[in-house]
Length: 417
Image (cartoon, rainbow, N blue to C red; front, top):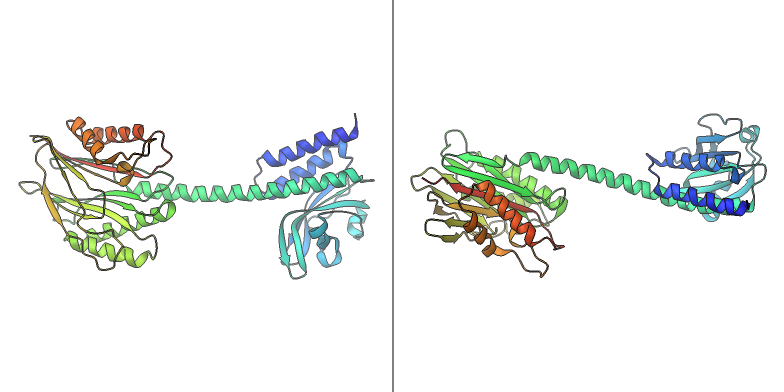
């Protein structure tokens, strides 16, 4: 077989292995490369070594050796000031040279090829590759020198990809942990409060999101009311998740110190304004179910989507508009408190804009009217089934859309007598 044909095939296998292989770290990738080159008979290489730059001591330290040679002492190092060839790699990448180091000569290395691999590191004396890979043979052909230049370039790219994958995995694990924290903060979906049945669900668009809902039990001695909050951070991704966590902690703490809704929301507005210098806007709807004879519901709507109150006995809808602006928009804005009543069988649906602004292939919004249609159609069902049917309708409506957002819904239903 033609040696050149053999080399082309073997080069392809090496390059493919570096580009697609799964390696635990940089050294394991390079060790795989060196062993493959040495063990491949077509290259006629008898030994290979990996040297790693030690920036503190300004030496190249031996990290791996492979082949049919006398072993170099473990952790042997070569000062870069004693080997100008290391600095030349910055411009020449791959160099053929005669060995001059006495320890290396003693192992049988007389003639070698060395190539720089990985990122360039700046030292006071110049720029150096993070790794240097050396090979030796009784005779190193020009064809191998050219091959090694190609392999070193591919190896450097593979190291970069490996580093990128590792960083992505770290970010992914961090996001998974953040998502777990968010899930743990959310309450159980179902809740019963006297003659109310409640169901809530939060579906983030990615690992973490800016939507948040909670059921807030009042301090001891005030069990005749229950707080329910739904909020949506204006930003996306991790910044939105941080805001959601902040709102969650602040409102849980605040509910234990303030008995008035207006004080609670106004203080939260100031906290958001002071804490987030940018991307500070948050919409929020907060309501309290009470056990008054007419089941009075107190609520504050800080720029949030308009909740929908449905009365099946008269087949009428009431929309609960904003009672104040977005939280964090201004430092001293006033959020008003309004009220409504819940008759037996009445339904109140609170949601975020991921529901109303879900789009179809024609770029049309799902909108409030479609929500009202779903409520009317399924009003006799449990809050859980109302929520599931609404989410299913939204999913079918936006199935072909490329625009997505977090989706949160809370359904409150008073028992029928």
